[in-house]
Image (cartoon, rainbow, N blue to C red; front, side):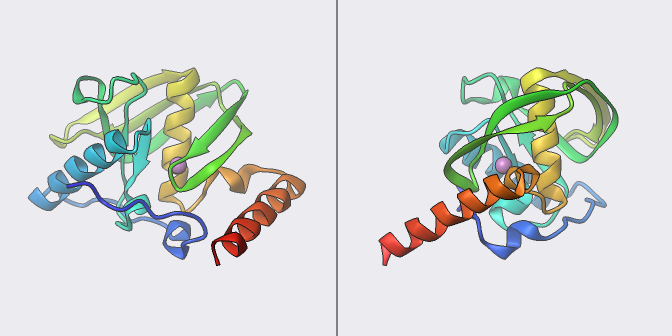
Amino acid sequence: MIRTILTYPNPELKKKSAPVKIITDSVRELVQDMANTMYDAPGIGLAAPQIGVHQRVIVIDISGKNEPPDLIVAINPTIVYAEGEVYEEEGCLSVPDYAANVRRHASVVVKALDIEGVERTWKADDLLAIAFQHEIDHLDGILFIDHLSALKREIFQRKVRKAAEERR
Ligand code: NI
C-alpha cells in the first residue's frame, strides 16, 4: 500500500521513534508499504516517521531503478563509526520543492537488523552514507533543514509561509 508522506511542518516529523522490539507481520507490512511509497514518490530513502509511524525503520535504494533488488531495509539502525566530511545538496520527500547543501560524514558504518531480524553491517560512502545519515536523523525527529544555518533556515521558512499564503 502506498502511504501518505507527511510534509514539513507536520509535528509528527519532529517526534523521536522507538526501537522495534520484535519483527512481526505488522513490521513486515510496514516495510513493504515504505518501499512501495518510496518507489512511487520516487525517492532514494524513507523513514517510518515520514508516514506517521514512530518506529526505527528505514528503507534506502540509491540505485535509481525504483524496484527491489537494491533495496536496503534497516531496522533499529545505528551509526557505529563515521569519518570524513562532505557538503552535498540534499532534498527530502517531507520537504518538497527545496534542496540545500548539508554537511555530513563521508563514510559511515551502520549496524541494523534486516527484515529477517539478522544483524547486518553496511559500510557506506558518498551518497549511500548521506542517505543513511539523513534517514537515521528522521528517526530522531531531525530534518535536513535542521542542519542549515539560522539564515538559510529563515529563508526556507519564509518560502514555506509564502507558499502557504499563495494556496489560501
Ligand atoms: Ni528525508
